[in-house]
Image (tube, rainbow, N blue to C red; front, side, top):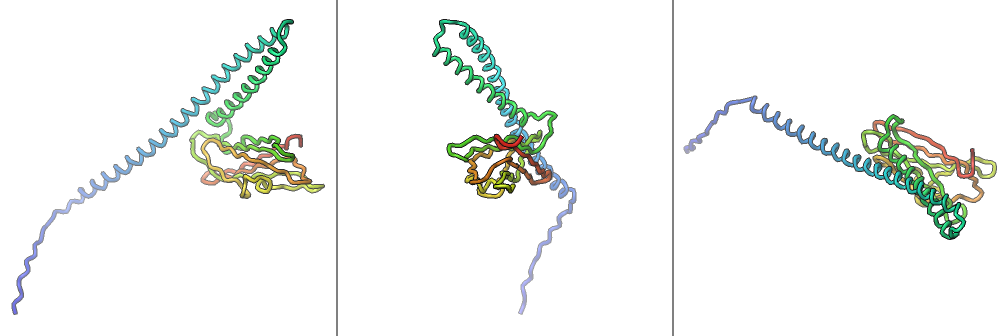
Length: 244
């Protein structure tokens, strides 16, 4: 029995290590260029958002200056009205109310400008995580209060910061000092601490219903961020009408 011959074809290819090197180098350069383009686009987007926010702050400043001029003119008119014996009493009251409303609006605008300046253009002030504001207003029921907590990050790099905020009401039940977590008195909070994540600031709002026989004295706010530059911030606020 005879087996057939099998013919094999052998091809010799010249080995060129430089060709593989330049191919890999080209792929590496493309990866670096794509990564650089993505990073540059992200930085441009952050810069564009910051410029928009700064424009809003400038607009608020201009509005505040404009209304300050209106107040000056209304005060002048009010002074003239007070010295005039034939001014209608109702018109005088309306003018006085207008002045009071404008004064309140100016104060609000000035506070907003100061707030955005602190957050968006920190300058030489201490940078980092902050408890900016804790506000309490009486609610529509007895022993019920509306609260607002403002957390800010004063920084120049516009990176997100995240962590948790713990809020405690400190006061007395009889002769005993107690600390009540916000989650025990606020239906809007369902955990011992409040999660936060923001770039510039975050508002936390809700209602507090005080327990019976509890006399509040202070509010304690503790912030704990996570990450490479973790920070812990503690601040106390007197309860309205209490403390110093």
